[in-house]
Image (tube, rainbow, N blue to C red; front, top):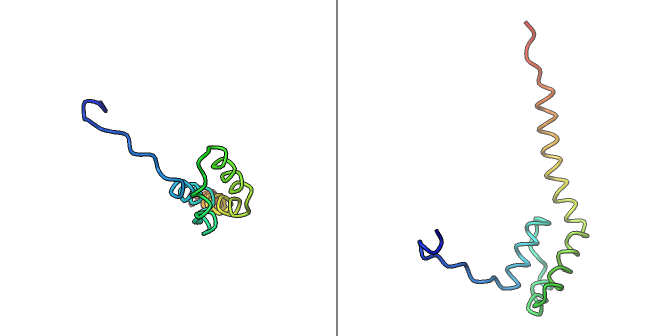
Length: 87
């Protein structure tokens, strides 16, 4: 199907864009200016993996996902607390 429609894979993203994407995905925040400047030197997968590990260890990661879970639990709690009227 790809060859039949003459589609090409997209070009590989640069390191700054990858850092921006992973930062927003994991913490909900953009990367710091220093991280963007440092991304110019990131060429190896190990440096990218180290950056992801620092995001996973940051408090912003926990805050981002706690917010998601708190919203879910509050909606669930409201849903089970509404009881149908008794007849």
